[in-house]
Length: 406
Image (tube, rainbow, N blue to C red):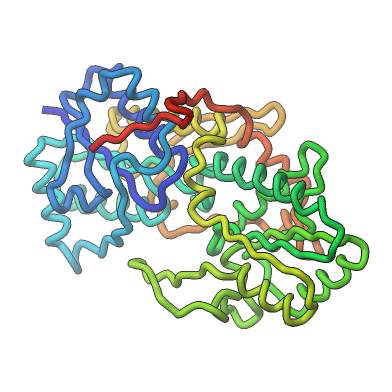
């Protein structure tokens, strides 16, 4: 039997299910796979032998279309950091046992940086132990920080939501003539791509944010207060976009001033709270009205305003990952290579996952203005094609129609 299993991992996005749908479409049209399974909650599903049969939904065109536009991870997700096989081989043996039980020939893992680390480790283990299972990665992350791909599925839709939200907030605060500051905290621990997307709010002539602070630049609290104080002299209502991961000179996150130091399963510190910290600082130092807004999960789950470009590319990347697996490629990740910005042209390729895992693509410093609180036109030109197009979401009872796989 030539069976395939697919899983999703890491933070959900508005486009991750489009990649799953692309894989399922590839299975349906190829005729080269006998059965297709989904592992529930990422790699944990393989470790715990928790699989569901996706063969029936694969044959249902309407369900696949609904799946394409359903946000979050339909198969469930996890944040499981795989240790090296020589440290924790029992975990690898359990995965192999699941492969053997279900006669799995192909495994495609949809995820971000840590997920690609799993693809790398598992593919190397299979080679070392002479297991012939093909292990292939499909990219996903709103953070847009994956190496060797021009951009990552999920980023375009999150960027479209952020730009739209910033444009709407700018209209709201411009209606008042009293001194006030609104600080919007946007996801991004070490990569400021999402925060940079706030600049796209200016595309239709709107003012957009007054200041944009990315986590790639050292954040100077005193200079920040001075910037705000100076701008308030000429403009009563200010809108500021900040990365959640902005750091001070000593390397400490700005949010450390209010956080409790807790960490996640990967040892990453929980860093939400930068905007709230800055709100308190401005209220104390300047005394004007200040409001902080944390976009939080909304920016990654906003399928109602997803980018059709993002959804289409995500679906095609799923198909590409499937084709690569059928061609015997293992230990690789489907990726995007950009040919030109205008007209926007790309091609789908595959890259060695060993050069993706544990690498982080941050915003190049030349894309940040010399004053450190805005982005360049070159960065806007890079992002603009990724938010184009509106999705054809089906509505039911006044709400977007979605699908649940279990």
